[in-house]
Image 1 (cartoon, rainbow, N blue to C red):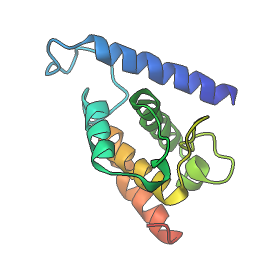
Image 2 (image 1 turned 60 degrees about the horizontal axis):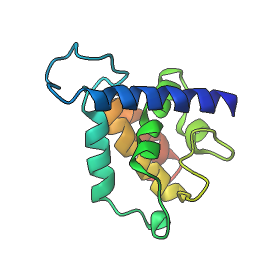
Image 3 (image 1 turned 90 degrees about the vertical axis):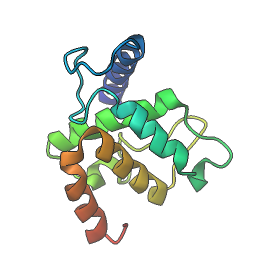
Length: 137
Protein backbone atom coordinates (compact mmCIF):
# COMPACT_ATOMS: atom_id res chain seq x y z
CA UNK A 1 0.00 0.00 0.00
CA UNK A 2 2.84 2.39 0.82
CA UNK A 3 4.42 1.76 -2.61
CA UNK A 4 1.13 2.52 -4.33
CA UNK A 5 0.78 5.74 -2.35
CA UNK A 6 4.27 6.80 -3.40
CA UNK A 7 3.59 5.90 -7.03
CA UNK A 8 0.31 7.79 -6.99
CA UNK A 9 1.98 10.84 -5.46
CA UNK A 10 4.66 10.72 -8.14
CA UNK A 11 2.07 10.37 -10.89
CA UNK A 12 0.17 13.35 -9.51
CA UNK A 13 3.35 15.39 -9.53
CA UNK A 14 3.99 14.42 -13.15
CA UNK A 15 0.42 15.26 -14.11
CA UNK A 16 0.65 18.62 -12.36
CA UNK A 17 3.90 19.39 -14.14
CA UNK A 18 2.25 18.50 -17.45
CA UNK A 19 -0.68 20.82 -16.76
CA UNK A 20 1.58 23.80 -16.11
CA UNK A 21 3.16 23.66 -19.58
CA UNK A 22 0.44 24.94 -21.91
CA UNK A 23 2.46 27.21 -24.16
CA UNK A 24 4.39 24.87 -26.46
CA UNK A 25 4.12 21.12 -26.17
CA UNK A 26 6.06 20.40 -29.36
CA UNK A 27 9.46 20.70 -27.74
CA UNK A 28 10.71 17.25 -26.71
CA UNK A 29 12.87 18.70 -23.94
CA UNK A 30 10.14 20.88 -22.38
CA UNK A 31 9.65 18.50 -19.46
CA UNK A 32 10.75 15.03 -18.46
CA UNK A 33 8.30 12.26 -19.25
CA UNK A 34 8.12 8.62 -18.30
CA UNK A 35 6.12 8.08 -21.45
CA UNK A 36 7.86 6.88 -24.55
CA UNK A 37 5.04 8.22 -26.71
CA UNK A 38 5.49 11.92 -25.97
CA UNK A 39 4.31 14.59 -23.60
CA UNK A 40 0.66 14.39 -24.66
CA UNK A 41 0.22 10.71 -23.77
CA UNK A 42 -2.10 11.64 -20.90
CA UNK A 43 -4.35 13.66 -23.21
CA UNK A 44 -4.41 10.80 -25.72
CA UNK A 45 -5.25 8.32 -22.96
CA UNK A 46 -8.08 10.47 -21.59
CA UNK A 47 -9.52 10.99 -25.08
CA UNK A 48 -9.59 7.23 -25.66
CA UNK A 49 -11.12 6.55 -22.24
CA UNK A 50 -13.77 9.24 -22.73
CA UNK A 51 -14.63 7.81 -26.15
CA UNK A 52 -15.20 4.41 -24.55
CA UNK A 53 -18.08 4.05 -22.11
CA UNK A 54 -17.12 1.53 -19.42
CA UNK A 55 -20.15 -0.32 -18.04
CA UNK A 56 -18.64 -0.67 -14.57
CA UNK A 57 -18.54 3.13 -14.27
CA UNK A 58 -22.24 3.64 -15.07
CA UNK A 59 -23.09 5.01 -11.61
CA UNK A 60 -19.70 6.32 -10.47
CA UNK A 61 -16.37 6.51 -12.20
CA UNK A 62 -12.88 7.87 -11.68
CA UNK A 63 -11.90 11.47 -12.21
CA UNK A 64 -9.47 12.38 -14.95
CA UNK A 65 -6.78 12.89 -12.29
CA UNK A 66 -7.37 9.36 -10.96
CA UNK A 67 -7.22 7.98 -14.49
CA UNK A 68 -3.98 9.78 -15.28
CA UNK A 69 -2.25 8.11 -12.34
CA UNK A 70 -2.78 4.60 -13.70
CA UNK A 71 -0.71 4.31 -16.93
CA UNK A 72 2.59 5.54 -15.45
CA UNK A 73 2.23 3.00 -12.64
CA UNK A 74 1.42 0.20 -15.09
CA UNK A 75 4.35 1.08 -17.34
CA UNK A 76 6.71 1.21 -14.39
CA UNK A 77 5.62 -2.25 -13.26
CA UNK A 78 5.82 -3.69 -16.79
CA UNK A 79 9.32 -2.25 -17.20
CA UNK A 80 10.16 -3.99 -13.93
CA UNK A 81 9.24 -7.32 -15.53
CA UNK A 82 5.82 -7.76 -13.95
CA UNK A 83 2.90 -9.46 -15.67
CA UNK A 84 -0.68 -8.42 -16.36
CA UNK A 85 -1.78 -10.78 -13.60
CA UNK A 86 0.53 -8.94 -11.21
CA UNK A 87 -1.04 -5.64 -12.28
CA UNK A 88 -4.69 -6.67 -12.34
CA UNK A 89 -4.92 -10.02 -10.56
CA UNK A 90 -6.47 -10.65 -7.16
CA UNK A 91 -5.30 -8.09 -4.58
CA UNK A 92 -3.18 -6.22 -7.13
CA UNK A 93 -2.09 -2.75 -6.03
CA UNK A 94 -2.33 -1.43 -9.61
CA UNK A 95 -5.97 -2.44 -10.15
CA UNK A 96 -8.13 0.53 -11.21
CA UNK A 97 -10.42 0.93 -8.23
CA UNK A 98 -11.24 3.86 -6.00
CA UNK A 99 -13.25 4.58 -2.86
CA UNK A 100 -16.40 5.48 -4.82
CA UNK A 101 -15.88 3.52 -8.03
CA UNK A 102 -14.67 0.15 -9.21
CA UNK A 103 -13.72 -1.37 -12.51
CA UNK A 104 -14.83 -4.85 -13.57
CA UNK A 105 -12.01 -7.00 -14.89
CA UNK A 106 -12.99 -6.89 -18.60
CA UNK A 107 -13.07 -3.08 -18.40
CA UNK A 108 -9.80 -3.06 -16.45
CA UNK A 109 -8.17 -5.16 -19.19
CA UNK A 110 -9.32 -2.71 -21.86
CA UNK A 111 -8.26 0.27 -19.75
CA UNK A 112 -4.82 -1.29 -19.30
CA UNK A 113 -4.49 -1.72 -23.07
CA UNK A 114 -5.47 1.91 -23.63
CA UNK A 115 -2.92 3.08 -21.06
CA UNK A 116 -0.14 0.91 -22.40
CA UNK A 117 -0.91 2.01 -25.97
CA UNK A 118 -0.46 5.67 -25.09
CA UNK A 119 2.22 5.56 -22.38
CA UNK A 120 4.46 2.56 -23.10
CA UNK A 121 3.50 1.06 -26.47
CA UNK A 122 6.54 -1.19 -26.41
CA UNK A 123 4.57 -3.38 -23.97
CA UNK A 124 1.29 -3.50 -25.93
CA UNK A 125 2.05 -6.81 -27.67
CA UNK A 126 3.13 -8.40 -24.39
CA UNK A 127 -0.03 -7.27 -22.61
CA UNK A 128 -2.24 -8.40 -25.51
CA UNK A 129 -0.54 -11.81 -25.62
CA UNK A 130 -0.91 -12.30 -21.85
CA UNK A 131 -4.60 -11.38 -21.95
CA UNK A 132 -5.22 -13.69 -24.93
CA UNK A 133 -3.36 -16.56 -23.25
CA UNK A 134 -5.74 -16.32 -20.28
CA UNK A 135 -8.83 -15.91 -22.49
CA UNK A 136 -9.42 -12.37 -21.27
CA UNK A 137 -9.05 -10.61 -24.62
